[in-house]
Image (cartoon, rainbow, N blue to C red; front, top):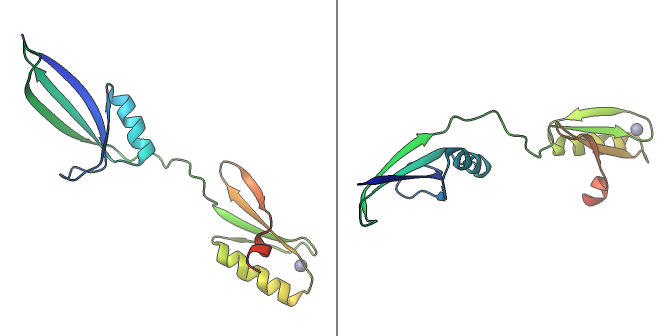
Length: 136
Ligand SMILES: [Zn+2]
């Protein structure tokens, strides 16, 4: 009597030279790991095993994972600058914009001190301390 053994690998492509990670004994585990690694495919291996524990046949099937909802990443979504001296504030998409804004503000108003806050969905506003010292 032959029996069948199934296991799963997470992989990054269907090419010959692909990265594979596993094996996992359930699809859910493999999917979870693929998600963490950013891999887009699962590979399902089926070994048909004969009476003498020998592998008679190997089948493998690629399964493309649907890109799920964007996973929370630790990335600032917006940067907020606020002048601690006069209260002027602005919102920026990139850190260089925040720096330019701060440079202009400090140029126009000597001795004003700009504070920078990162806004992330997970953590809300968080002050980035010492950011002006770093680029001085
Ligand atoms: Zn100011």
